[in-house]
Length: 303
Image (cartoon, rainbow, N blue to C red):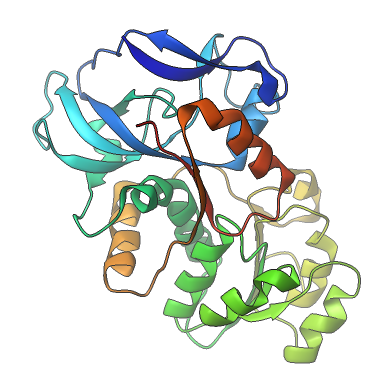
């Protein structure tokens, strides 16, 4: 038997339980991982509260978590690219808040030995989302990009990856995170009322593109600063779809994971870990994620 976090009804983090389960058996094209780290994402607490049930119907009881890093423990039929004992990262098929999880072999890449487990478990969603969003926004060298929630789990990736592209980055964050954004190469501004004026103080002509990882009402200001909705993209403010901005959902592929890993290995991308949790602390991890204003990544460490 092994341990996994599950929920049998939708609700607050109080519905989470750590239960004994049989380790899942890999099917064709799948691998079983001994999980070493699982990134915590806002989609996790939204799933538990039932906000995602229309997009991702679940049969309860269900597991939780999709970002994963671990050691290949068993191989399904037809898997040739990995061997038992390989260290990998990517996206899980079954809940990654667990000691064991399944993944499609095509959704995994090798974990470099120099990348710590807690970082590896945070890359697929945060790094993949940031990379894909910047691609969709067509951010290029010399442009100015505004990133909302720039010190958060996705924002910290987006800031550094945009800087690596040669963009001038303005990031919204609370004042306690301004020094960190400066370290990443961004110009920090405080979010909230008066945002347009503060951004124009450092970018008088507005910005070329906006990446919204906040979802706290910044879309009208973003459209004004970008001169229209075409190059404004959100990963959270789906209620603003009628404004004509871009909406991004879904996961990146393994080629993107490899690109992100290259940036980590050569030092262009740092992944700050805000806090790690044991499986028994999963409820506290979700509560912290839901509260917002997290600086860096939250990670579950099953062992």
